Length: 263
Image (cartoon, rainbow, N blue to C red; front, side, top):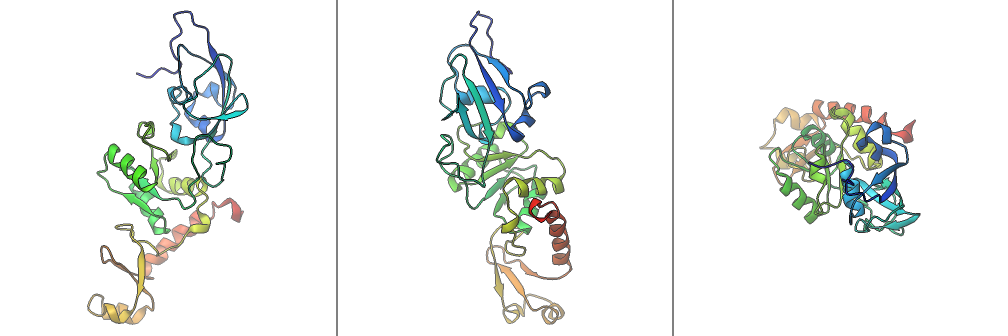
């Protein structure tokens, strides 16, 4: 079982001071949030080990300053260090100062864990590349994220606490509509919303097709009632701007109300 602070019963009085910023405080005990607090430690301990012992996935951290200087996760704690820890800055390029991230993700792509199916669906509805299966294993998610440079979206902190994971985000809300808004805000996705551009079934891109090419695949009444049709080349599903599209558009409008840039 992980301890919140390491054992110092052998008399070793080494300690550092931590200060966590912004949403990283969500992972801390209440009395430590938005506060400088002491962290006693025993023996050699890395920045990453200390941060994760406090319950914070390293994937949610983008910048660590020790005594005002940027360091990476392998830096060992030294007595009386002052450590400032900042959350991921996916929408800002801090590669010149961060020793942790190689570069920000310019075009976010996601792999969503099995418990966030509705979130994955609505990200696809808005046109964002979001891989999802309800039977993904944790090791599969980590492998896909590493291989395809995707951001893991999850409510399982343990999934993110692995050296194999470079980009991940712990979704706070348990309500799917709030989850959608949370992810839109976190990664500043509003300007990238493109409804009816991605298949909500298999996540592949949609392509515009002529009604003539669909004459044997759709109801003639539908073919004569709509001008634009889209088809997924992977699963062959066909889309048009009918009542279902209107409902999706209404949902998106609700999400846009939360866009700080529109207030």
